[in-house]
Structures are given as structure tokens and as C-alpha cells.
Length: 196
Image 1 (tube, rainbow, N blue to C red):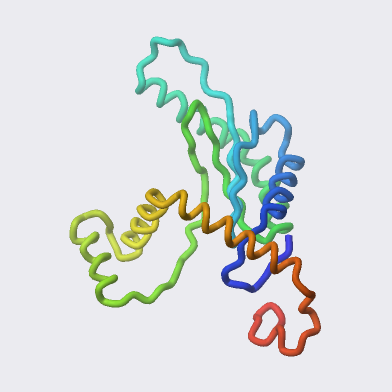
Image 2 (tube, rainbow, N blue to C red):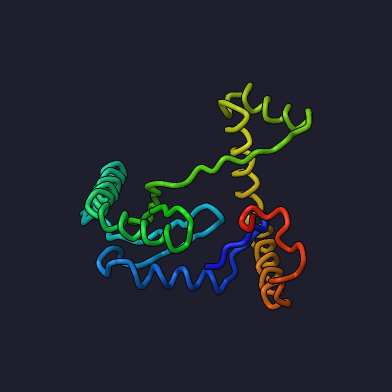
């Protein structure tokens, strides 16, 4: 997968399909019942598969069902660790991103690991006051937690808009890739740390 120094880099549909195809072909056949989702951004690839739920009778309580599902997820995590680590090493070398894992089991989704990437930003006083209010109200422990809470809130309430925006960015990326080759253009790599 081609890397770029463009800080607004978006992976194209074709690259996403190629990456999903690689995992489909590389994962051991008996690892998951089905590969549910492969999500990728600049730092991380998250692979989520479906595993069979525990065998339970109809009359078990909700608490017992929840405990059984959590136990099944933990058993899967421990039993498959070596296989997943081997695949992750290959993928991290090939795609230059960390690999995280998760499962769906009996309608529950659990992530085993995931990258928490730091994001730096500058905020003006009114924006800082919003974060400080969330801290004072006990919603968050720090400005960092408060900012993450705000991002999750926006994500939850604007999923359709964000999906449309991502589609637009993917279209722009495809158009750029079809454009003229910029290799050899004078000063095209100036300031690019990958070409210094």
C-alpha cells in the first residue's frame, strides 16, 4: 500500500479492498467464523471477526449469558494469541501500521487492543472553558479526556454527515491518483521528511 506524506491522507476503496483481501487470504481458516470488518486509518488497522457464541439454554439469565459471552471472548483471545501476533507482524511490516484485534460474539463486540494516538491541538479560551466545564462536572478527568468525549459525541450524532464527508475525500483521493505523475517535478519533495 502506497504511503504518502499528505497529512490528510485517506485510504481509497480499492486500497481498503486490497487490504481486506490480504487479511482474508492470510488469516488461518479456523480463526473466525467470518471476517466482519477491517478498519484502517493512518496509524492502525483494526481486524474484527465473528466467533461462535457459547451454547446456552433458553432459560439462562441475562447476567449468566453476559458472563458466558465474556468468557468465550477471553478464551478466544488467549487461544489465538500466537496466530494473531504472527499475522500482525507480517501486516505491520507490509502496511506500516499497527494491527489491533476485536471480535463479535453473540451480538457483543469487544476490542482486545487498539492504538491511542496522541493528537495535538491549540484551543482558544472559549474552547478550553468547554473542556474545563466537562472536567468540573465530572464528565472527564482531564482536558485530553474531555476532548476525546467531545469527539465521540460528534461521531455519535453526525455519523451520516461524517460518512458523506469520507466518501467525498475518497473521491478526491481517487482523482489525485489519476492525475499526472509528479515525480521529478522541481522542489516537489521540499519539506517532505520522507525525501530528506
